[in-house]
Image (cartoon, rainbow over all chains, first blue to last red; front, side, top):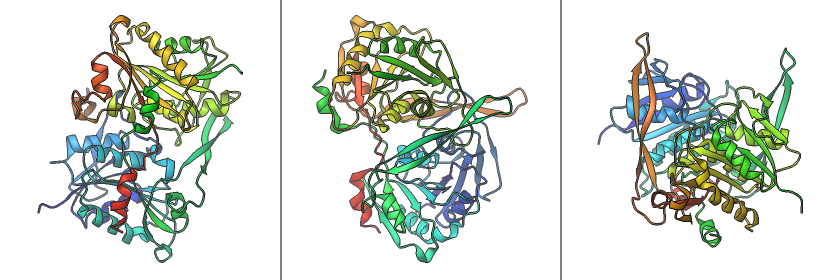
Length: 254
Length: 254
């Protein structure tokens, strides 16, 4: 069997502690390539760069054979790595570890998860990892054994469809984490607030803030609940956006 | 019954011909509010602005009561409109008309469609319109009667779940368009090419380009095929990213 080729990216930027931790774990599973944004790209969703140009330059932060910082989004990084950097299509895409939660509806806004989804769109098993701690000084080591277990199991998992996993690690010490639970994303939504300020010239500007409202509080099958209960949550994620169940009723309209 | 409040946005920017055409149509259905990007934001997917600030200023391009150009993404525009501009939650979100196709897998990259999806996440019926013609001088009038019919029918459509529609108008004259078909997105993927160039200083830079490969050529239930056949395609779109069918097999792993 050939050595596994593992592509690592993130949305916090190539020098973030989370991706340095993840690329080190990845080295235990195969040959690692890191192509990640040259600056933070949080909240970029599935954005790609089509109205402007991309740059990429080699870095030596991760001490791997192929390592580039790219001026684009996390999804750009996946496309660029596969098409311009890697000798062949990778066997696994790892994204993260994100500094902060990507539970529930956050998948759709997350650059971390969009990179993983893009990997799965290319037919590559992919995992996005997030630690539910927004601090740049967060301790990623508490999740290590769970991350290794999930990577190991996905690498040997047989499935007709490509698998993409959204993994969220609670902000707990290793011995406080209760285990791993496969589940679905909770139904939730952000209630936004725009924090309005004035610049030194008196002109208003805004910060997007808000609160996540869980529509399924305490529902035992959902990631928000299980993560709160102390589990590492694993949600399989897809990219078929068609809402098939609505087709019959809508077809009757036209 | 109160007058319908209709929020119009796009990803090509508030001054693009496509959104000017759409806001004019919208006026026939209620009170129109336009909050759209102050510059092109194509390919922005579901990106939001969280690492930097937002600006917004009033414009008079659309001659409506509420009209703002926003420095953010299409999804930012929806959030900003609902939270800062509009007197109440709108009854309908319209996004577009995009200058170019958003068929099949393109939904996930599209700023136009992500704005509509964000509307539906807020519980508002939403439609993204795209004309399969990338020219800034495209003639949007050929799609007018179909756009009106779809808006009219969605406004009176009763459904338990919020409806979000991805509408693609073929690049044909009105009398060549065969009608409207509700269908699903075709399975497809982009095969990317990065066009590598050198700047005047000899440093490489890249343009992301590529070709869409249809995995379901000529499949009669898919948007790519029906659009090619001359139909206005209407695909209901969702935002639940969980791949529910994979949960049982993955649960057995852990």
